[in-house]
Length: 221
Image (cartoon, rainbow, N blue to C red):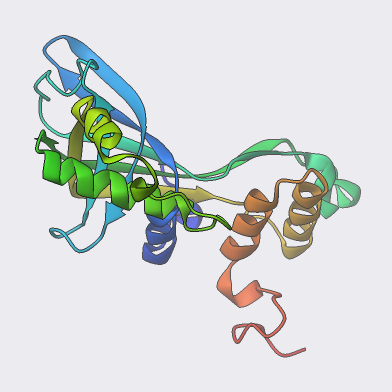
């Protein structure tokens, strides 16, 4: 991944990206060619040197049974958005501005392990459901469904675990723009209802230039 220095992700921002409830693309090189599946995942930072990603595939999906050649790749995406140059204060000053696209992404490489054990799968789907239901007013639990039904559903899937070997991450969130332009980007995104992208831009604002009220890094007036 091409990562200019000003868009390099910090360890904290990578951790935040991997722990958000999300789905990601699992990509494997196999004797049959490249295979890819979008699947929800759970990040476990305590396993191994770099942590692991846990997910599952439909049993009928051939990706789990095709041996992976070398490392596998999971592409994790955060919020992304079109950035209009009309939002920049710089447009009125000199006009030398163009559109761009803001995004956060992590390329997570590792060795893929297949799990076809009912106990592993039961623990995984419970953790995955709890992770995604955490913000719900009335969270659904695996225990809400009949046990025989859940057992049948578990027989239809196969677990996958990526033992992470390295992570390349990029947060392209207007960090290279002047403060006035960043303010315009945040305002523009909020006007479109893209609150997640706006929050990411504000959070990525260079430390010495943050304007959050009460932010200890805020320089004195």
